Image (tube, protein in one colour):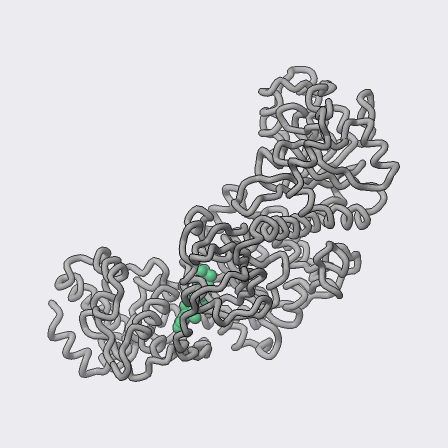
Length: 634
Ligand SMILES: Nc1ncnc2c1ncn2[C@@H]1O[C@H](COP(=O)(O)OP(=O)(O)OP(=O)(O)O)[C@@H](O)[C@H]1O
């Protein structure tokens, strides 16, 4: 690449048109380029970069390269293995570039002739490729956008970069700040870089993992995931804990898995995550051994990667709560108590049996996954795998490898034999794509191809394999609105939208008492009842977390019960929860009666005045229903 070099690659018509207008008018034409390129070109113009600029400023390497490298030792140490590995596995045409958060190149790896060629263009350690100085380029633009960026030939702002395609993935430090960027650059159009971008993202997650461990050598470092097989993989979440049990750092994956912003996690005690106090946990954990725990955010497997030697005062672990039964409600039970809902579930079952995809719509915690599992269990595929993927819980850059898998040797941490993607794992069975509305657009295109062709190939492998799956998707988003705002592909929308089932929010359900009963039984509370005050408070509450929140609340209540106690009352609720339940209610006396009467009226209406059927739906006896009818206003 020499500064005088002109474009030899045929550009797509839209890019060619945009370049011509830029050259003639010095302006970026409206609506011609991809949105992120459009925005980056405008920023480049604002910074005064010219398309023929030789970019002398940034390209003058720093005076003291040794000092630069010494100042970036943490990043270089964490990335060295990945750089070596990627440069040996990305073919004969590609460069792997590591830059710091300032867009200054720290390392360039690749075949000798490609490195030599790129040196002429100033792609050498010590040069800075910030967007402000060089205009649109993947490395600089990824740092501005703080996300993965691909730049195809003529989309580069500088004319002389028009023969090159680049893809860059930002690297974050344990505190979540941008720490650098990993880039792959090759001569030729972008097309073939798509697969490599996913591999680059895996390499970055390896680097981030190493940064995490290297940054907290004296602290407790904990790896966790909701699925045991992902411990040790790039998908695991990482937490650094102080000896007082407070969270010092959380990786991006940890934030995603816990569904929390980093700011909300830092400084918090880890008790709720571990399911016990840190001292108790340290007394039983062995570095490397896998433990499991149930938390408000769901069940997790975790492993201590690092435990400091300092002795701690140890408290004898309290006896653990009896394990709950994991028995899953079947389709019939899920539809009980609401004939409309039962009908929708029957249609979904019928559709699935005839090869139609199903979409489950509903608020978080309303039971979409439970319904998906019940549909699978009720289908001819019952003995085959049910594979659930939560598209919102996996970092954007990693969803692709999660779904498609990778072949052995795709990156340094790749396991022997590679990893079978979730799509292939579901072969013969059912794939449940939860939060499908959160799937990145580029991946939507790839998924669409898989669904059309019914074939799949792991990353880094050319060979496709047949795929036979039933598909159930779920989302709490309005997919139609997302299609309109171009966040969701229309063609994919129609491909996954066979039968849709709207799951009611808990506050809209008429069978709250029945649900409480079945959850109590499932959680080991057979024979345990709610007091009438608590039932009324439950009935008046709006349950933003739906059944998941109800389940957690019941679990907490059961844990607070003294031995032999059979009634759960307000005394068993911690103050904060009691306040929360009360705050959302009107004055208890009226609210309690109102909500009870609404529930009772609705149940009677739905069952055409049949008291036995209404009582059954509400999970109470006929006698109780009559008693409550007498108490409630007409
Ligand atoms: N009908 C039900 N009976 C008993 N428990 C249920 C029922 N439906 C859901 N649950 C429980 O509620 C919790 C949340 O359910 P689930 O994960 O299916 O919700 P979701 O709608 O998929 O949530 P999200 O959108 O957040 O992924 C789970 O612990 C599940 O066991």
